[in-house]
Length: 123
Image (cartoon, rainbow, N blue to C red; front, side, top):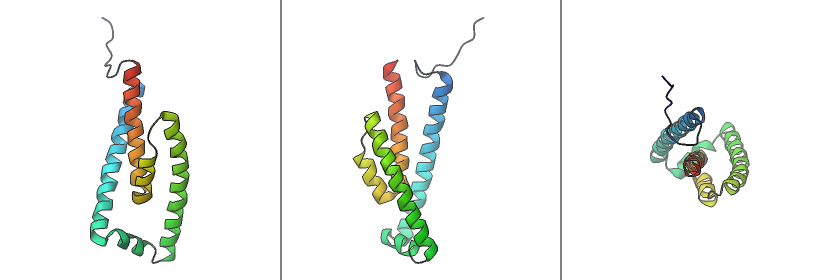
């Protein structure tokens, strides 16, 4: 009797498809958890209060500067990646500027979902 394979999306090798699914679920879980945690802190301290607390110590200023540098580098990569994949950049850049890593996580999730849709269309 022949071996049967579960094919979820025609044209995508099963191992790659599972990797895509796991990446998508991991991104979604981190995005939801981190967004919830961020919302809780903003409700508790306010959006500007969040920055006041962060910038009240030298360690907080260092973390803030590090975050700005990291997000600037990521935005540069995101712009190139979005252009190469014909994905929108400006909405995710604005989200990143306002919400930090939440915007990056949203872009990465969008990128995964768009890649999965493109793979299905090619099949």
